[in-house]
Length: 105
Image (cartoon, rainbow, N blue to C red; front, side, top):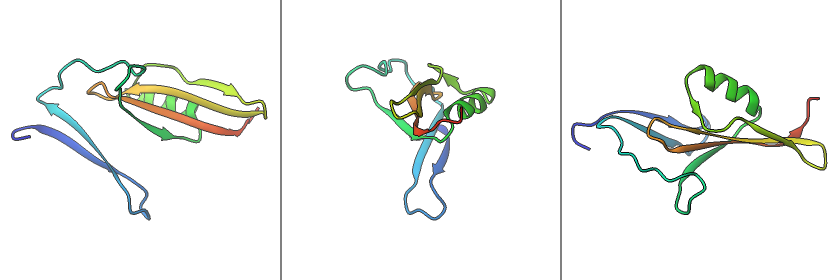
């Protein structure tokens, strides 16, 4: 976009051959009108994490706006899992999932 001010970040494993490009348009600002995360056609990106509650605390302290707190549950097998959502500066939803792992309690 000509004249746009933006930041770019590429996320990936150093040894991997895949990367994800994240673009944050600073100017011009994004228009309103994002869909609710549960509406048909809503898009989001999801990351698997190993410690959802620690990640939530760290990102919250850095100013990330979460739309849900971590929702943690135990599976019938006694494994701990969780989910929460944040929004990026343009209002896109970012989901964080902790797959079932051995509970530390």
